[in-house]
Image 1 (cartoon, helix red, strand yellow):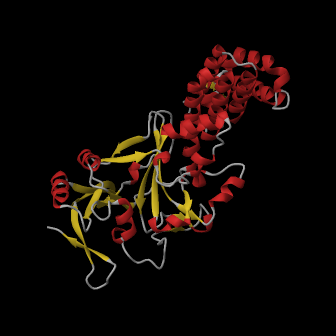
Image 2 (cartoon, rainbow, N blue to C red):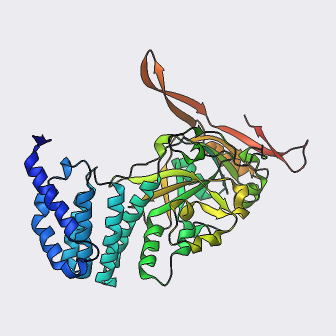
Image 3 (cartoon, helix red, strand yellow):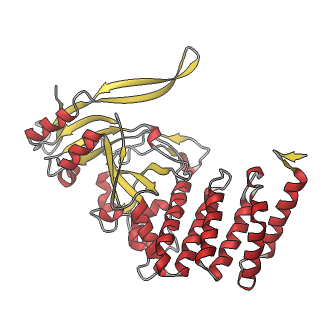
Length: 410
């Protein structure tokens, strides 16, 4: 009998060795057996590693590698950490190496690099970026095709993003609310590891913010096998459209001198399964909380609280966020390509004619393209729907003082 191409008796022998290794060396006795753990794992690495493609679950191998990582941390050297890094990297490339294992291994690797000395903290930050990458990958479950809005000032920066059909994203530390993305503020400034993780977050995590009066689809009562609720409004008593939000015009669109962009994103924009060399991208609604201080009472916080929690003072924004984790990203800003994703542009009440002219020239002949899978002649085909970008001029509603209406432009 064989397991794929490996003889079953050979597989069983190696698996037994790995299991005995894991059972023999526990967290309680690693300190006293660090040398034995390192020697045993190094000696058997090539044999043990070869059964990974044939395992139904890599849990035992991941646990053995974690024991090795813990042992290296007791007596780290540059050479041993280079070897450990290569072991983890090789394991990472197998589909069976679940995100939980990858996340935990890179977290431990980051700590071990730091323990070797501060001059190696650049390696620690790179490991922590991988930890964050898989942590976010574990938190992304569903791809959506949201319709949402963005209020913008008329700047050269805006013109460039429209011309290049790109979406701009920013590090949370650039946001106007100092309590936004609580993870950045809650990481202990007196803890060196926490500061390295913060640096990793600021490097690889970027966010773009939108307005959506409708919640993203969600499972009723939190049951992932239950009914999916769609098109539920965030505020049932608010029947206005997103582009009529006068506070957003005032706060984010330069006192009505800017524009509001209506996007219709394809679900292909979302990257849910975080394989090495890819990025994680997904949408999630912001949750508004009565008291953010409760987060300081927790030993750890969820990804939802880390990046999608804000004070109720901001509830008028009805915010939807796109979060991006890209291991190759550095600095405070990033951008991604979003061809043919703009459905309409609304010009503010006080938007200058010169800005309207420039934007309309940039967007001339642009189309929104929506791709949908449909049954055509009993075959599944991708059908494209193309719609020219629409333009609207915002005006004061003469019938209702204090309200805005959109007038379509030719």
